[in-house]
Figure 1: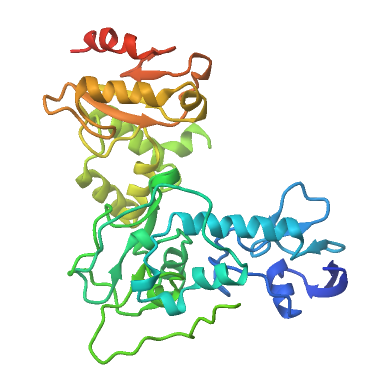
Figure 2: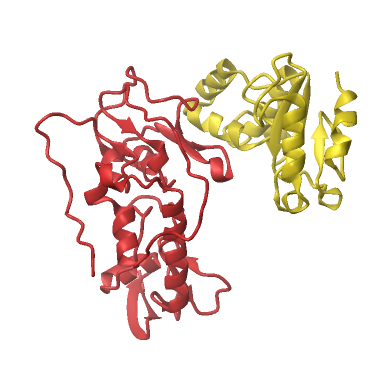
Length: 226
Length: 144
């Protein structure tokens, strides 16, 4: 466990061997936005929001899964990086239904939070909206896959922390979808424990708990800047 | 992976097992996928994930003839959409469906490597290139 020195945003910082760029950045108070990243679980690298510029690398690299190397020169908030992050969010928002106003997760939606942080307005792209019927048969979980942004957090978390694998990814390209069983709605007879792991980790309102009377909305209030 | 490894069924070479069944049965029945998942000790959603990813693996029984039209960029730029619309009108079903008489299944597929003859399609294993809306009817007539 030797110390590795690298340059981040012009300042020399050091990290330990085996750490990822993201971990070093967070330890040094540099905020790199993430969506699919889950601390201490296998990096997913699906959302690409955490990309950074590394000198000598042809493309931007995902900081959540790239280990640090001695002498790396990293830019975490260069114009190029910010542009890519904004387009990524725009693309996610473009295929996300415009139902924030009636969405239960609207006050604690990570997608909205990231969009606000990066000052992304209305998306320029007109992509085909993904529409799937609401799955509300199960007493522990409601799935609204129209709101899913394919971050795969639920897939990873269920597999890593619960040792089960309720969900998998299926189809391809625009049709990609997180599925249960043979792409069936989560039935009322599913024996999954009501651990809420996937629900609490879902960055959008795609996974949620059935509303019970008297239950309060959870999560911090989203303050919109400006 | 050597040939010897491939005879042992694991999740890593699941594609071989799926292809084998596709060849034999014509599609991948749900019961087969459930059984396979059980025998490999993986969730059935993983097996379905692989099966649904590839356009040459079917999860529903296909028609007697399978039309596969390329939906990748070169064919799209050569106005592949018109060909898709023409076939849709001709056989009366949308992509992803089978005609009620079971004569045709209509699928969109990713690049089939016939970009020089774009827009291109496959019917069963026969190649049809440089398609125009005018050519479609006579090509389809050959398949009963």
